[in-house]
Image (cartoon, rainbow, N blue to C red; front, side):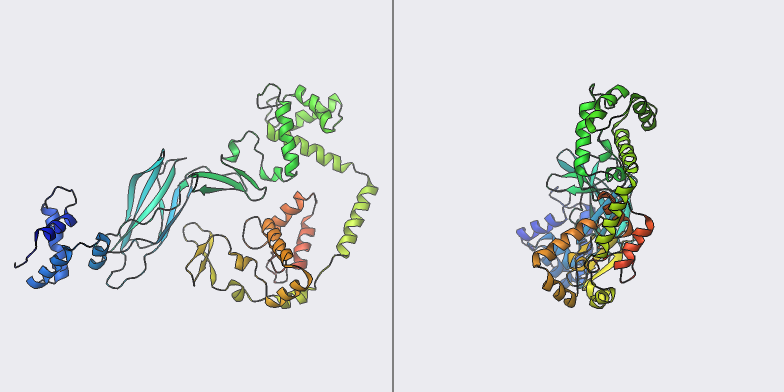
Length: 446
């Protein structure tokens, strides 16, 4: 075979295929070189020589692989985890001339050990071109990242960039969600309903209470209860006995007889331990609050009812027909965005056909969309700062970030404001402003 390579070209060629860095090509490495040369050259000696001359040039390995038809890695990898494992999904590589379609993928997992990430194996999906997979057998409470490699008939791609970090853990209490702070490389927890944030799992906090119980009081009241409980627990046992309770009730305005205190303690000690933990203590305060509300005089209740009725009848409003005429079709509201359900996670996400961006939360331009006509009317009556304040208040009330205030969110908000509302009244409030009949309150209806 009449092929001429100088020493530098020969060294470059050997370096490309010398995977074990031994300085020479073994049988397997030489076969790979020959296969690549023949597949590129087409079988003729001159073409094979030209092919080997090409491989001997000082080209980046990535460029050489592209020239030979190797695939590109996925452009973006995302992951989420639960107590059973992780769901990993990715954006497939864009099509490229001369590159064959993917025939499968390899998902590699990396686990954080100390301050670095170590490889912990890979899972092959050789004849599966789906862009989402479940990864099992992950250790609980350890942090993981994932990379993905594309496969086609020529070979495998480079590794993709790492996914976000996830951690397998038991299900969180109702209302709580887990997020990852990339700067601190640590997970944190957020409760959208109560606006609580913590670096530790909420149910490991000795002062943790259920979300619905928390919403029965204001944040200031809950802070005061925490201080009282800590002060009341004289022996720092993490629980309050009957004698400690008797000493603190007068300080919060509850003048009860010894017999009443004993009965209250008996009713609130749910686990019959002879002590009240923090959640039982807060439930006791809620019981006192509700009983106090029940003994309000009939005249006072009637006066409050009349005032609410008068405020309701005198409220400013725009007619239903007027609002409906000012709303636009859903297609115009969505613009370039479209809503999809993720096949693995089972959760809705949004895709922008113009920019290619994806979001879990509804984009602001969709969430706060109002028609030009409605915008003109609002600008006649309010300043731009007022409109921004409306958006902020709507976002605060939209607890799950869905872009609409549903029945349960409205109930939570009214309960937190101290309103005791019936199901019938709740449905009536929604029907009054729900002009499109969706059962929820959108921003333009708001």
